[in-house]
Image (cartoon, rainbow, N blue to C red):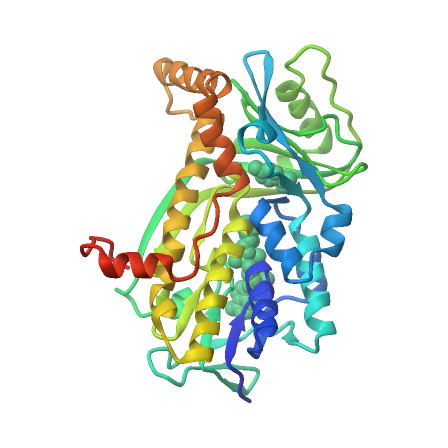
Length: 406
Ligand code: APR
Ligand code: PHB
């Protein structure tokens, strides 16, 4: 078998890449280890940046998103017995976020791929990557061989593609946080209209939502906490303690449909390319979910990779492919910083002494009272604009050589 781009992984990165390439007349095959049902049910974060929404709409996969997604024009930071709204409509006019579950994005993309006759294979659990440092890379799986021009590693943090790169090529940057998030999906009307990020002495809590009938919550818990220690009553009691901290706010409770514990980690592998293997999304980087950036960053990578591959197929030029890693990593590091910053602002760290706790509260007061500080939060949360394809490469070509390794 042969295709132009072999894509490993049918998460948001792999599926969107396949779809965007198809719109540019480029063939691909997507190989996914799990079943369709599994990937369509996997509950993840659910905040889409304006640019992500625009990308999905422009690609023709935004119809349900526009109908069912919940546009939000602000968030609340709750601490010290008061709620403080950060207004996106005032600070970054004309831009909003949309609350829409990641698995809904995945369902829409799978439907679009299949209706366009795309080659998308599930339950392929033995993909191996070969000859990526040659012009004829290929994938093997289930006794078959798929020859490709390029391979896209969109197989998440635990995938096979990053680990196929020879030792010594990548530099990996890691930040493990000393806590996890316990995520809860509940059949209950949201108790707030916008997302509430709550900092308390007992730890962080987040009230989010999926629809008028379904709410999403997160609780900061110790790292690697066992979910068995969290029966539903304990979850509701802790959510109430951390969220019912402002006058007049009562948390409605209901049936818990899903709960799981996610470790909090920042990770970047550089460069995001080796030979003809290009990493995108969680395969190359992960962020703690506090800024809700994981999916959005995967979309940004895939946009850059699509432009680069399209340029190559149109003109034979590798200039954008050669700039892929550098272009993506600029945004990746901005988002690493923002996610680290939001995490540090809102969580309790056992290692913090009384001085650091005071600094944290002062920082929160600053963000909720200074227009300049709130704007920095708002523009990062809504998502910084995309760079124009190739702009950075021309800039770098003119500038002095820089120290970056990619
Ligand atoms: N072979 C084939 N598929 C694989 C393999 C493998 N060896 N290993 C992993 N996969 C699949 C996973 O089953 C998953 O469906 O790759 C897919 C990767 O998808 P995601 O983990 O969703 O990653 P990505 O598409 O980069 O999306 C990033 O996901 O983790 C969230 O917060 C993150 O929202 C962000 C988004
Ligand atoms: C979610 O709704 O899942 C969500 C919202 C905001 C975050 C993280 C997750 O920061």
